[in-house]
Image (cartoon, rainbow, N blue to C red; front, side, top):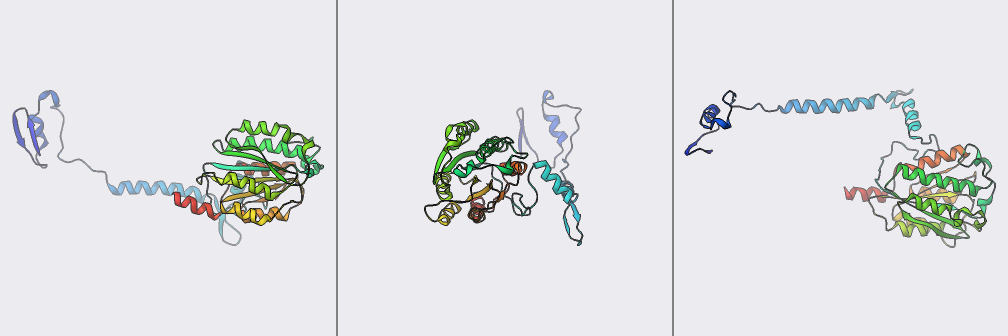
Length: 321
């Protein structure tokens, strides 16, 4: 190296004594009492590796605390831990849980693009029967009242769990699908739409529901949604039939090709085969509410994104990464 100190140049090597350099510097810029060392102690790579391994071991030990040996000498998650997680999240457990295979690979998206489809056919004017017990509308006299109160609860909890996601509402009646509120991020806009006469007036519930028209209407809107988010449909069914003008399977294939996940909650007390097929073909879930309390658990379970098993999104998210 080449150094200059005032008018006297000199050259040094790395091995020279640093005290000699300090003696030639101006007194104002150096502390004479300071001690210099010819070598700087380096951080040992072994120590850094050891610290990293100990951190990973401590994190891994928390996983083992949730494991227990089953009766057949197999290792699995203890039931107490699973029950605690379910209670903490407020999710349903058992055969009607959202995503029955908890060991599947989870793909969580930051933004959800979801439409809820409300069945406002003439069947919505039927007696709610079991849906009033412990539900959101204990004094409801029709399925329409239960459906409307459930939709309002879902909109509020959806934005509480997914504040930057987008939601839209479609209603089914008279064999047609009507857009009640477009895809957007304003909960007040959706609540106002649910309070409008188009949805809140039970006298407008008429005809039959058409799942085919509903899927095609929603599919056209979700096809323009960005791929970095999830595309979902949640159907609230209040009837046991679907009056479709064409092939329902073709409409299901159309939404499946663009990666839409269709789930459904039945208010009829019985399962509909067509809805079951739709949910199975798109990787969604289907459950029939047994009572009002069960309905609230199902709605809460759909507010938080659980998993995406659609191949379209597995490939799409992998390409983005």
